[in-house]
Length: 118
Image (cartoon, rainbow, N blue to C red):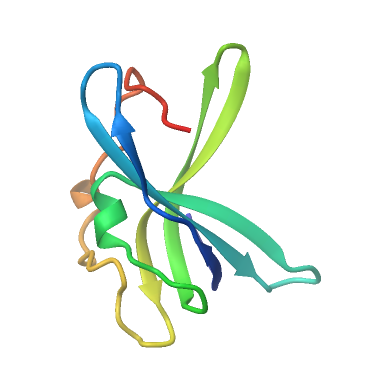
């Protein structure tokens, strides 16, 4: 999926270690989409190596490509929007340094048995 808009918040990087001993990190952003009658704000996460590849700043006009995943934890459901590519439109250059590759080249999200960082 994809969405276009302007980055309005870039939150600090968060990192940790899962129960299984694997290091993880994530970077979160908030995008404002002004298409339609009402502006929509969407928070999304860049997880793992995408946290290093995707570097955005407030004011960037971007197209973000993402996957949506929901997981159950202790009887509650959590939805995560994970970006795997972001193109900065104002500069005309990709911010993610991700080549326009076949979908098979996109890294897979962490396995469902990994600790869910939130």
